[in-house]
Figure 1: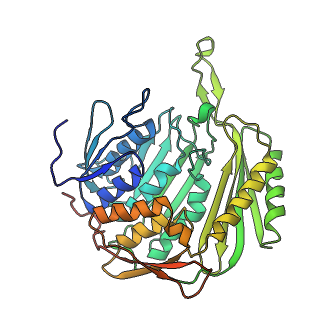
Figure 2 (figure 1 turned 30 degrees about the vertical axis):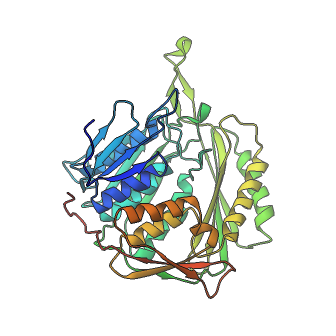
Figure 3 (figure 1 turned 135 degrees about the vertical axis):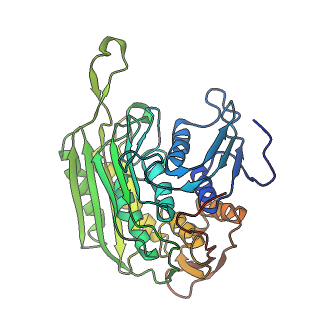
Length: 403
């Protein structure tokens, strides 16, 4: 691999890879990322889900250039024009079909959230179908939220920035993590048809109070009674806190995959078996806080424990304070930074803005030329809340040529 030029923005390590690549695409800056698991004796370099994400970026852009070293420990990414599902790019019939490999250990939200950040700045509507043996629609042990939480807690955030038309996330086939936490054979379709020149500047300074709690209990390939047991346990914790609590139940059959075992090569086996719970607390001001828990691939945890753990996780998320949850904070801060050249303000909890993902996001934005954030104590709200002021860059032009 040739030596990178000084114009490249340099990073080290595999952490927050999606944020760095998304910001490189939005700002048009090339990046050089090194030291990607160089000391791993068995699997150095990029993992299957990271390579798959690079291929997805190549599909939704035109003119992107990706160089990966022989060992996979170094990559150079030069972004192109964000075209979405425009004819002649990576789309076929207006749909980009992206297949995830069987060794994928991350949930589909690992791919959905970054693509949703690119979609408003695309030249054409974004229509991506996630399919293949590696699609996991549930929450994962790696910390990924479920597709249900993306639909109910992440996508509604875009309406605050004036992006609300023709946005839909369809769960065509549910799946939990397969054996060893790898693969699931689910199917998800993301339709993002609202493109804007610049997101609106927001000023969200009033957290409000919890108005209602909604959720989805799902099970794949197991008895529907697991859903009822999770719902009953979760409501036992949440009902004293919020009377308007309703949790839907979704039961689906397990997907099938060709067997990899030699005696059964011509047969199919069930995969993605399990159950889980997604909860979302909606505030009177429109703020959304989510929680996700799913059964581990090895099993052994009763549905009651899943329901109770998810309910407590939601209460813990709400207790952090502010007007945005920890899961949604990076999305909101990136959209604020990519907005018009004006000051946007967002009230958050001290532990949210002080978390590792948000701190690293601030450093990454600074590396790409964004303004530094101003942080001050909030005058109202929970004790310890702070107000983050972000100046937009005004670079989110639709259909612009990135060089």
